[in-house]
Amino acid sequence: MAQILVTGAHGQVGREVELALLQAGHRVVAAPHSALDITKPDHVLSAVLDSKVDAVINAAAYANVEKAEDESSLAYSANALGPRNLARACAQAGIPLIHVSTDYVFSDRKHAPHQEDDPTHAECIYGKSKLDGENMIMAAGCKYLIVRTSWLFGRFGRNFVKIMLTMAQERRELAVVNDQLGNPTPVRPLAEALVKMTECVLDPDFSAWGIYHYCGYQPTSWDEFARAVFAEAQRMEVLPHEVNVLSISSSDFKSKAKRPQDSRLDCTKIQEVFGLTIPYWPDYLGEVITAYVRERQGLPPVTDYDPIDLSAATTPEQVLVSNAPGPARLS
Image (tube, rainbow, N blue to C red):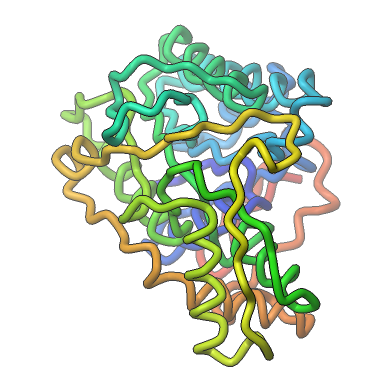
């Protein structure tokens, strides 16, 4: 049993990681932004050293692609300086960092999924800030895994699936972009993969550090993703009517951020090194739709998760560690 610090613990990835760690029998130090601001180096170092954790999983990020164009300083602070601070702290503590990154570090259409060593070229602030974060981690001197993923949708938090369902409640037609390719990725199997990777890196003989890709199978476009969401929602009798998806081009979609035209990811490396199975993303739509329905009813998105309320936590100096069913607390 290991003791793991999870940053961004209130996000859609952080909550799933926390739950997956607890279910695997590990102890969790859960650190949402209210308890640990990763942009503050002294707080990060204190949290990492005082908690005496075996590894750090960084799920914290500024993830609003559109708003990042107007709030670049916030995006760079969270997505670049924050990972740098965590990496430096991990280097000083002698523990590994597992960092969640993004497909938005790519932009070119290469007519094949991107591999880990393909040239990067981010074109929006979000992608650039995440790419800077990767580079800062690599320069910090810690042992690290950078896991690039894409088009996340999960049971917790806000994501494309839930947004589409909300918009479809009162509309029978929605315009969705059809000329951007990527891999929808269900968050629950991603979290389980991150846990398995964390367990692997705690082996003293592990040496396969570096960048990995993990995403759902198979690639699609945003409009086809939306159609799959609505088809499953209708099958589950969540939507009272059919929704027509009107396919439009990126040029017709009013957006400040320039999103990748082709951000498909090749996951061969992570399968070979860690023995992971890549999830077939349509199989996970049902659980996310169920979570959406529960939230609209005022219920928690899942039935087997009762997190400690960390909203009042303000400093990382005192750490309380617990086992399942509750996470640890930074307070």
